[in-house]
Structure formats: structure tokens, C-alpha cells
Image (tube, rainbow, N blue to C red; front, side, top):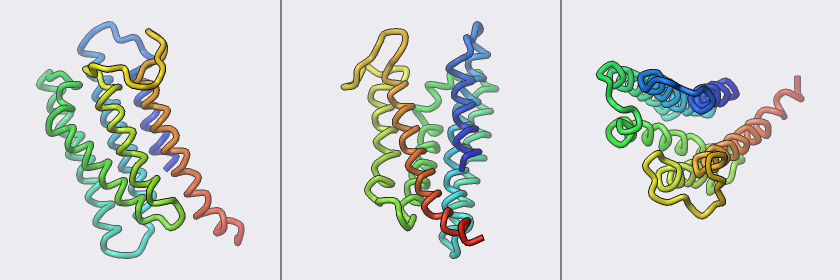
Length: 183
């Protein structure tokens, strides 16, 4: 799970922290960011599901992997066709990312210790905030304070996602720590 989280964060930092002078390079960076997000969600789903027994766990983990691979192929095709990546997320690609998020919520709801309310509400709430206030074409800045040119609703979204990840990592510690202490 740490590899998935760090990989997704690195892809996002690659996009946000590098000044892209040319539009085609920025589109490539956006593609890497979106693929990193989907791969990060896939890694989280695998972390929760792959070691569990049962047919449902293997199906969910496999479906997440297949969806991530399809998402990658679709985005690379759109990049090759020189389509605008931010606009591409408003269509089929956005639905694929939403499906990946729904599979993550399903995986988290099956956890033993994490409150199901938090597992069910955290990721969709962060995504809803992003779609309403943090997206490139958002018409409102949202209820949280912003600082023009420094701190925007998009940064608030990243903090929301970071808190969801922190909760997930805390849960993994609760689940795994007793096993490690027995060794």
C-alpha cells in the first residue's frame, strides 16, 4: 500500500511541481498523473483484497487490475490522438476512474476494524469535493479558505486524500501489528 500511495503522490508531484513550458509536455504529465492515481487505487485494492480468502476477493482484485490496464491504454490512445486530458476525464475515462474508486470503497468496507462509515464516505466525499470545487473548470472556490496563487481548492482535495490514506495506513497497522509481534 505504501508503494501505491507514494507512486501516486510522485506522479502528482511530477505534474504540479514542474513548470511545463509546452502544452504537449503538460499533457504527458497529466497522463502520467492520471495513470498514477488509477494505479495507486489498484495497489490499495490489492493490499486489502489479495490475501483474503474467497472468490469475491480475487475477482475484485482482478477487476481492479484489468480496469487499470484498460484505463492506461485508453489514456495513452487519447494522448496519441492529442486529445485534451482534462476534458478526457469528463467522459469514459472519468467513469473508469470512478469505477476504480467504487472498487476501493467496496474493498475498504470489508475491513475488520475500520469504521464502515469512514470507509464508505471518505473517498467519495473527497472526489465529490474535487469535482465541485477543485477541478480545472470549477465555477466555485468552495467553503474552505484559499490563497490566490498559493493554496486552492485543489490543495484542499489533496489534504482530504492524504487523510484518507493516513486512515488506511492506520488500519493496516492495526491489522498487521499483532502478527508481527508474534514473530
